[in-house]
Image 1: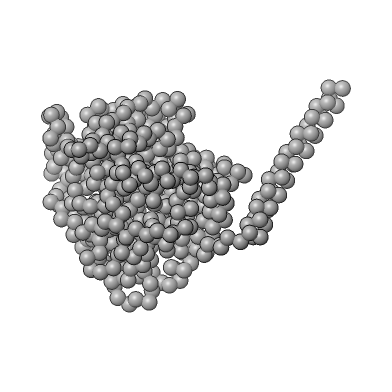
Image 2: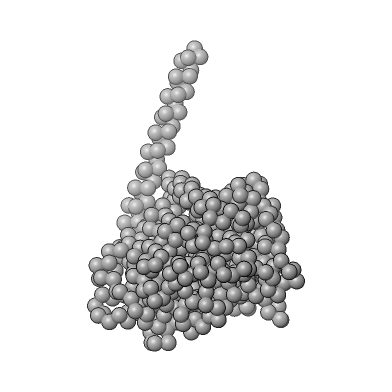
Length: 508
């Protein structure tokens, strides 16, 4: 395993997100009992951590999803060295900033061919001389959020496992082997790193997914927003996200005033992946069956995630309107019913870095979709439009048709996260098509699933064990919620009646 500092047993038991992720999320929890710097794997994250030396990098990377750590300077590139190299490069640049939508090497079946490499190759082989001059630079870092984009500290959101994995990925270009940090290797300052680059022509920004996936407060608010009395939580979360997002966009524009922006809307997770319970995978990364609670959670998320996330995406769209820049919508591009669009491309497949399949990361195939969408947007120039892709698998492989739509007030008004995806039968294998048909009856459990999850998910996020289904306790919970609602309705009715009486007296 990658050298790392194991968290204490108390951390594993009390940290709310760590406890919530014991069942198969991208997080790797390290038992404190192990004195070795090589942590023992446990089921985790988009897959469980995998045993054996062949899967060495996976456990520590997954652990970074929820725990802090220190970063060795040997695994990163200090700013001074990076700046010297970048300033000597006369090519104009396309700069990636944000999260693992762009910094996606670790989860690919072919880690040495991340999005940066794919897009640069596509631009270099373009028929336009102007596009051939563009050099792609990655400043994105897996796990980035709007909370720590400007200043990300290793002790609170570590990138060490990804940095070490970069050294083993087999990159041909030196810039892909390291992240750019402060001289002591403890802080990544994304905006300052951008400011030090010359010739920045385009900045591609992807943020938002990890705000939902990694932040306890945001998760809790969104989960409780599924209760009728707390729906306003969604708008509150969206407005707070919008403020952080706009501030970041403004910082980027000041740091690279000549650059054009491309904003990215994140994709939907695969249908077999839960933001709460992860993927149905065992300790070897193999797909399992009989995970009843996990299946219910995933069914519930499929039904409700679009409603929960749409207000946040609308903040991205309105920001793009304010700036006048294009948006790449991956929620309407990747097919959440197609394994090939996620992670290593197939549940049970593990790449040579030891990373198992993840239903929350792009694959080699969908990374190609993203590269084509970005190349199209760059070629078209700054336009206030939304781009999405319609993928199709044919005899010669995957292709994508790009659709363009004006990003105006009407689009924002009608927008729904992932709502316009048209899943052609050709994008899925026959087993996946059959499975899609089997899922329809499961959706009918909506109300019952919602009830179970609304009781259990908040408990898991708080580090508590899920409640077993007990009729009396459930009925009591339901009674309390209904009593609450009845009191509010009566109070409102009483207030309305009083107003009506007062109005009648004034009229008389």
